[in-house]
Length: 306
Image 1 (cartoon, rainbow, N blue to C red):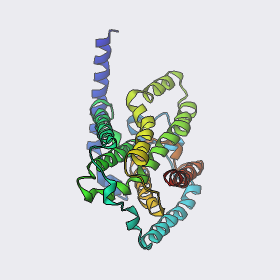
Image 2: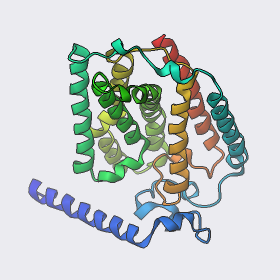
Image 3: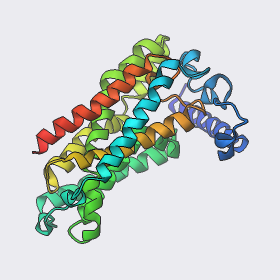
Image 4: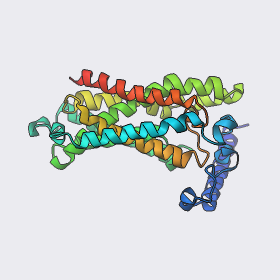
């Protein structure tokens, strides 16, 4: 097959996928997610258009395991108590404020931030315009993380001229570091090996999976995201020590994504992270991994930025 014929074949497959996705969302509405008469899993077989058939069916369908169901209320109560405790701390907001002379424009660091911002926006355009998922890629925690790091680059870039954005940039300091740490660490050393070795059994599919997830775009999202976050938060922008208040924005980010993942993606059969399936007691290890990453990440980055 010639390269032009292969390219045509790929484009035809992408058009076919696009038409199936459009048809799916014509047949489903937001109301389906809140309609109590609808089943929890809204798609047949618990796999979105068959894309997640490589995940074992008992991870996709059926009731949640009693173990995570019994532990979830306890975790949620801790989150609520932590949020209430943080809101009662006096002088918390003041610890996010840096002196006005901390923000300088047209320095070497500022020009680096400008270049990095342009590059990260280019990658976001590349995701939207060139990847098969297009705007759908923003359902992933990986792209959430990349977007947060990009936003913080932009806020640091304009902070010398617009003081009103400085608080927002500080609120995003630890979420950017933590999300990059989780994305790079858990994806490269836990999730990716688990999918390759446990979930994808067919050798040809395994080769395709490895090739796809090590391409230019995803290497940026899973590897270089960490370096962009560290450079932005620990070197080229005004640096300050972390404090307990930084755990609030980071916790809100993780809670928002977990709600999105379990209440929307799981119901639509989009199993991006099979090790977080609530239908097996093994999910407790994944939850503990995230909790440990949050606590360890805060301790590590607090010491690093001290």
